[in-house]
Amino acid sequence: MVVKFWYGGNASLAYLFSFLASFFFIAGANRILKTRLMLLPTAPIAIEIGKQVTRIIMRNGEHVELVKDLRIYADYSGRSFGLAGLDKLDQRLQFVFHKGQFSSIKDYQAIQEMLKTS
Image (cartoon, rainbow, N blue to C red; front, side, top):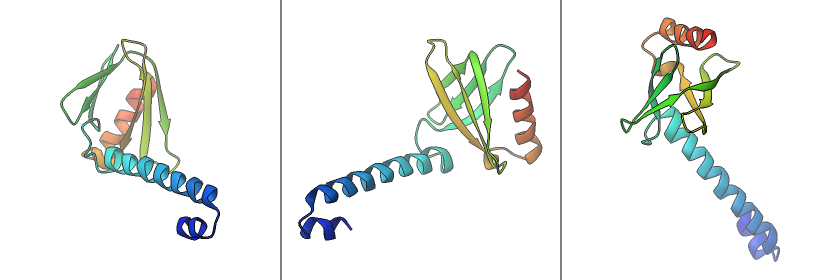
């Protein structure tokens, strides 16, 4: 469509569609590489739940601690859940965990229950 609009004399629509294509490509690639394939360094690979702090361990070895305003967002299909909260610097952070990241379905459900009660 971009080529058709570009050579058809409607350059403004060509710019618009090329921007939209680039934007959705970058957003989609980030989602696939970070949450689904867990290839990016900031992909969450483990979670530790304590009484006061929920610690997320990243692929690059860094730890992020969520200390307050912890919220869990369940997926309607039950295959993933989102976790959001504030760190020690009051910066809002969000993470997505998938069922395949856990060793069993019981572990996946246990983590969700522990997060709901904390």
